[in-house]
Image (cartoon, rainbow, N blue to C red; front, side, top):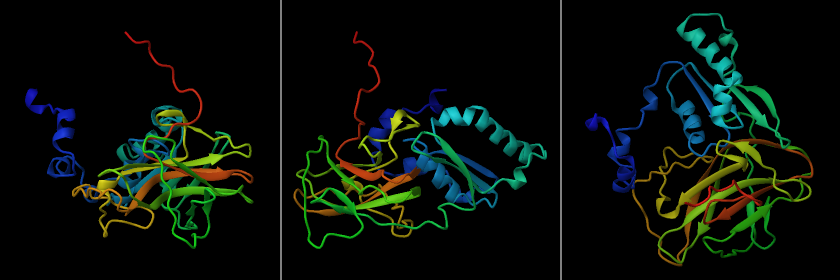
Length: 301
């Protein structure tokens, strides 16, 4: 038994980069040809990225993507998820007429700001009718602006502080964001490395954050992404405009004070934003925390 055990914490320290240790333990998705059902969650820090990439890269011609909200384990193991799995396995393993032959390739539970969901069938992911939209960081006004600033500007923040926030003006029409996203930042640091955390947010007309029950947080954000600056190297062949692909195999330390360009992936998300609400993004050097009290802490021994 000892020979079959792995000291995972020690391995993480011994292998800080993506090397053969991890490659030997990673699936070759392009070799998967059996039917695939990838059940994803909109906001799970561990599984969301893998679910979407697994679906996209699997070579199977029979594959389906289902995306839900709330906690991943609640939906997948409750009645909704069990019915989905029984229809899938009944069709492929038992030859039953479960109606799976009518299942859409993509089934989404689109999030609404009141915590409800709208179920919608789609033919592909990302959605073919997506209107890819760019926002620019307006440092002077703190806005997400439709046009870039005519001047180069800079602003600084403490790595462990509150960071920066950028918001649209109140929306003049309903907007739906469903799909992946990415950000490009020009960053300099006083140190030889820096961590960047990006958080997509929605605020109601009174300015309060709209939160969602998510994979690991009862008051989760709309979307998130992060990157260590020394891991900024990307694979040009595998990267897409909406999903940079970082190699994590060749660290590039920062030179203090010298700016570099970072392409940061923001994991797929979905939310329908009503008129009068605002879309925002936070840029921080640490993970985000929503205002208010957090979970209770156990008393110290």
